[in-house]
Amino acid sequence: MFISGLGAFDANGQQAETDVKYKAIALFNESWTIAFRFLKAIPT
Image (cartoon, rainbow, N blue to C red; front, side, top):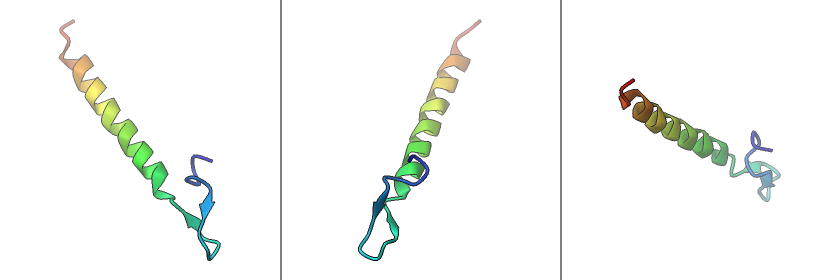
């Protein structure tokens, strides 16, 4: 279900709201980058 967005269809039978997956991936990448920078800044 994640790959196909919300599984919603418009009046023409085409998939709708498929951009949801891209927003989720972008949010994950942003969170990962912030966490990685934080961990990299900690002296060992």
